[in-house]
Image (cartoon, rainbow, N blue to C red; front, side, top):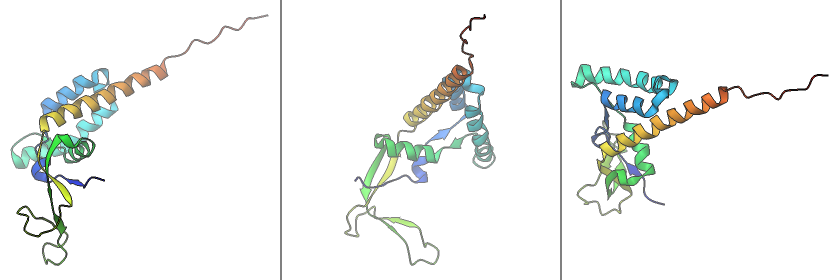
Length: 157
């Protein structure tokens, strides 16, 4: 079994979704662009986009969890280093914090692949293609279910 992969905020914050990405997502969704899936994503991201606009000077949202899931499914999306990571158990202010032996001075074998870079552009395009495609496919399936099927004609006596 491969070691777990960890993505810190320094990596996941490279996946910044901005309004142009939402435009591309709507285009990928086609007729489903106004449907519930795309509306849900836009509504969910609006809070974060407004937050970052107010506090960080850009109108966008980091999509941390989708990048982490994508990296678990396709580790080629990130460049990772195998290192030893431990959880701090005795600190007053740091209990529960992960500590990484970047200098390799602990003489412990690596136990985690820690992402140090991500192909954010490739990930964002995949996100747009997959989610937009899923929305379009669900829209087509819903239309197919709603089309009335011809009923057989029954002879009259």
